[in-house]
Image 1 (cartoon, rainbow, N blue to C red):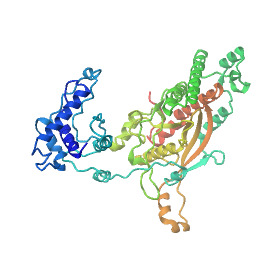
Image 2 (image 1 turned 90 degrees about the vertical axis):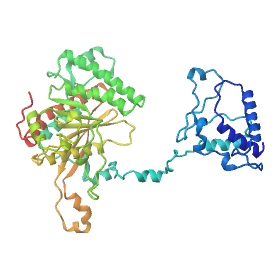
Image 3 (image 1 turned 30 degrees about the horizontal axis):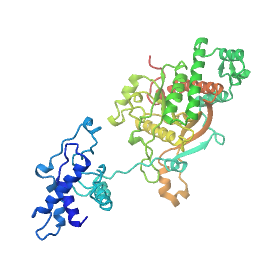
Image 4 (image 1 turned 30 degrees about the vertical axis):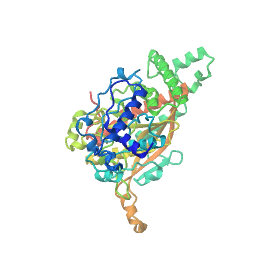
Length: 490
């Protein structure tokens, strides 16, 4: 095919609108050849000059000329019923300003494959809309206002930059505090499996026999009065079995963190808290409870806030609503919450315990989210002004990874005194001396969802934590933060 014919073909196919009849392929070929012969006879039409040479500029129509007059009208689009089974190719879509994802149309038989490939490459090129400048990544990003991104702390080294130190339970001990000492003593017994299984369940398992997973040692059986009646204890046993089955399925099928939370962690946590006979303590799903930006921890060297981290669950308590109203009335609208989040269910309930979950294959352990959340919570108390933070008890945190549940403790330590060596690194030490250091102590294993014994250990540990939140924590919060007695709301 000569260059003359190619140019004429491109011009005419650009001008010619799609036909609404279902002509055969041969008819289409004849029509195209007829149009090409007509183009040869016409002169002065912008495609063929009088001297017979091809005018390239007029061969490729401009966006405005190709869409002018009747030829720019959008062809009637066939319905889905007309398109199916008609044997015709799809109509071209309505012209848009950008055709980056336009589907290629079938190649006609007259155009050689090499030229058709060139036409396709032109068709799939991104062009700016008419009247718009070329939008390059640099120009588009430059047009947006710059915003400093908050970089989340992902490692232990990152935590040090925000004045947080991680310690190990088996090398260090928690500071002496009466309420926490009693809590840790109870959890030690639970970890040893002492009196964690109700007697009615142990006796029923012994009568059944044959299943080593349902056999218990004498020290593991609670022969005293259990916190639930015999009927409720049997219902609990059945519920825990369902949770164990769900946990096994989540692990075997490598299900997501959201699946673990919905099928395993949330039902277990709610059951343990609600069966603790502490009606003023409530567990909440907190996956959308973001940290108030003003309360985020800051890098002690640069002063920049770190990225806010979410947690999965919170255990909160109900307190004197009149005292809460009086305290929040002194705060700005942006800080109208007892906690470090504006999530509605947690605005008037102090958070006592938080939990972060991960799957077994997740690269992170969840410690960073827990300490950043806790640091922001302490920052919230500090802004209240009247809060007495000198006697804040070590705060329990829960880290959950797959089947396993761990307890961590967090507390603040006073800034280290200035020394002569500080002058050598003044800029690095200045930020660290401005605020207390947050210490994270972990991990104490408190149970798992691997067996009926370990899940009973876990339920008992969660009940001890719930009673701690309803007792010692409530008493401290009402007295030190709200300035009222520890009476719970009626």
